[in-house]
Length: 150
Image (cartoon, helix red, strand yellow):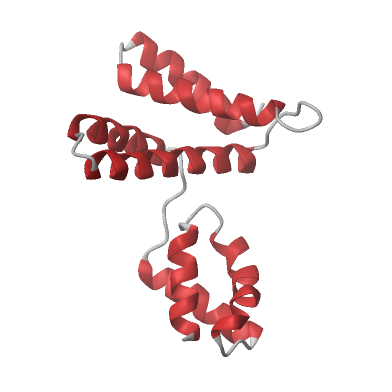
């Protein structure tokens, strides 16, 4: 079992004992998503830490998007709940890159790839993605690459 998944299970037990409904529900939802990912495909498999981290990132993104949708629909109570769940999941994710760090990484990748125009964005993204994996939202990264190549 991956360390991150073991930490989630331990935190679930702790949150249940503390009667923390938000944490308990959020961790259960995340563990269910991890289990679903483990049995998807042709054969069941155990996820490693990087794959568990990817599932948590996807779940946190779902919460952010749902909060935005609820807020736009005027359902503030549900939006607040989704935001709280997303914030809780953020505690399991690595620290996000700041704007300056992201600009520096993209600038280095642009120089390394020799890209000069927007249609070469794929070359730059191929270099940047492994360097920022899990530490920056894909949209932020692609926006910065597009900005530098324009």
